[in-house]
Image (cartoon, rainbow, N blue to C red; front, side, top):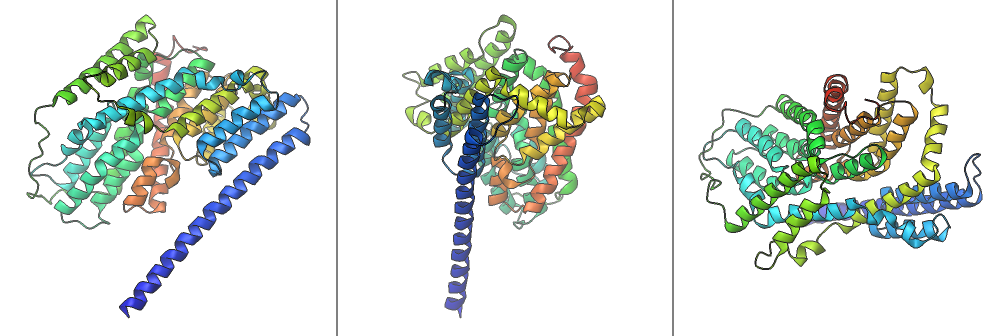
Amino acid sequence: MIIQATSRVDAMQSTSAVSRLRGAVDRRHLGLLLAVGQLILWLTVFDVQGLSRTDHAVLGVFLLAVILWLSEALAYTVTSIIAVTLLFALGVTDSFAEAVSGFASTLVFFLILLMLLGNSISAVGLDDRAARRLLSGRSTPAMTIRSLATNVFGLSFLMPSAVARAVTFMPIVETMTEAYHLDEASRFRRASYIIIGHINPLASMAIMTGGGMSIISSQIMTTQITPISWLTWAIVMLPPVTVLYLGAALSVGLVYPADDTIVTDELEEADAQAALSRDERLVLAVMAGAVGLWVIGSFTGMPTILPAVLAVAILAAPGIGIITEDDVRSISWGVLFVIGAMFSILEVMQTEGTLVFVVERITEVLPFATMSTWQVVATLLLVTAVVRTMFSTASAAVIIILPIMIEFAESLALDPLFMGFSVMFLIGATTFLPFNTTAVLLSHDRGPLSISEVFRFGMVTAVLAVAVLIIAWVGYWPLVLSGLSPTG
């Protein structure tokens, strides 16, 4: 009987695995066919009045890249290379160098440097030291939840990657769950994984160097609106993000109230106060120096990339060797290729006026003229939230959605800077499905959260984000952005 039952379970698992594989294959094939089919239509059939043949080709390449990225029909890197090659092959650009101009963006190299600096934090064990602070000799589940939220927020200033922070804290949560003798479906474990998945990525928006999405957003706004310095970003975003993070953390306590009476004596006091090693001191000093230079650069005009270059050079220098060739090889090159290709496409769309044309046509169709200012803003943000659910990462969503929304803001006489920060803020706070954010996907996969729970708390963070945005639009941003805003 046991053998038969085991065989049935194995057969069910095998069938399930085959079904998932078939679904993935079908989605990829469908994506590939759709991407190629629409490109052919744009090149041979469609004839939109007011658009040149070059514009038709640009839109076809743009949609091909987006569809392939969303369906994951091809590797991100392969799709990116195909897209920029088509820009040149179809005569959209005069040279291949123009077609790949987006890869020469400061943003691409800045992200490489930030990834290397983030790896150095993990390499010397500073992330583990921060996580181990949760392991107290005498603590309760409620105390641990508060400590987890605090440590995740604090670590975000040193470790840009929300995924890295999630991976760091997951083993600690499991250790604490066992120490409290709680089951896997306990409110403590559910609350912990909500913090790791949903709330953890919010902290990355607080500073410009806090993650890929922030860096990408600042570069887009700098290109399309006005230069954004590290200090300006911190002044504009740190208070709203802190309020959002605090509100989300408090909401976890209301949705999943953890027991405050269970006390464990089974854990030895964590050695979080032990003396820092030489490498830990060096990384902390270098990171502090980089932050200091970013602040100084906000006043002197120093390029934002320069402090990052200096920091990486020091940590990779002979005799130090904290950053190695293995760190370079482990960089997410696929993501960087997506950024480079999309910036190349957007640059062509802006040069040709394609993006402006599309926005103007949509503006003519939608009844924006009959709406009040707040109705227009609400409509654009609603569209942002809906479209964002199609993307597997916030960075990818920002690359595509933000430039379009800035164009909408300018064509509708809205403040483009306010709209830019709002779109980025809402994208970062909107995770309705597990695949929308990698940290949430990890927490769903490894933790006790169901898809419905992921959706419900995604609604919580989205509603909180809207509330914070209203306060920022009405009271805070007009004060701090009056000198920067093009309409201020």
